[in-house]
Amino acid sequence: MIKKAPEGLWLALALAPGPEEVQELVKKYGRLGHGNQSEGKIILETVGGGFRHAVALSLNMLGKDLLKEWDPYIVKYLYSERTTPTDTIRLQLRDLINHGLQQDAVQSHVEWVGKKLVLGGIPNSLIGVAWIQLLKNFREPRPWLRCEYCSMPFPIRRKGAGRFCSDSCRVSSYQKQQRQSK
Ligand SMILES: [Zn+2]
Image (cartoon, rainbow, N blue to C red; front, side, top):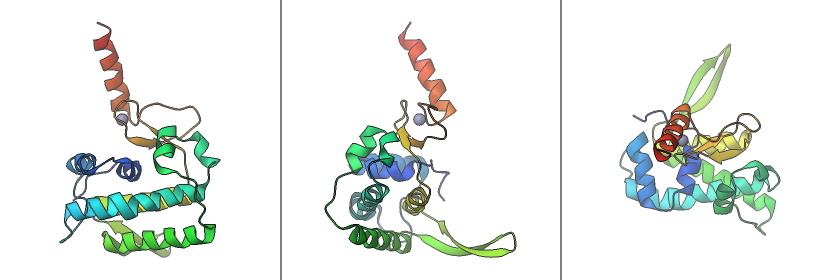
């Protein structure tokens, strides 16, 4: 089972410089893939390839203006100007996400939402969670920062709020400062 993954897992995976950083996330939050998929293969082909590319394309489509509020490190690492026509990027992004959702363990299921029976997906692997987070951010984009204590990306909820992803990082950072000033 996957533990509750942070909201910024999708960006943390896309920002991971190499397999070791991905393994760190796997150790904390649970299996990256499912079934017979080997973790190494997913790291190299999905996280290092298709997934990161999909994140980069989604940032392109959001556009540079929207990214001004984001952590410059994230933008620098994942955004690049493209000469590819927008229509092509749209199709590529759609195909990558579809491929990811099908390959990487997002199971269709239906759920009652009031009187409507709604079709949705349940991820049963970390990369499945990440694909859904990517999709969610694309549909409802929010600016993302990185935690000053643990580097985990987190969304800005209101203007000017926060340098940390969680209360525990805020506290840890404060304690670290106290120790250093002694
Ligand atoms: Zn943190």
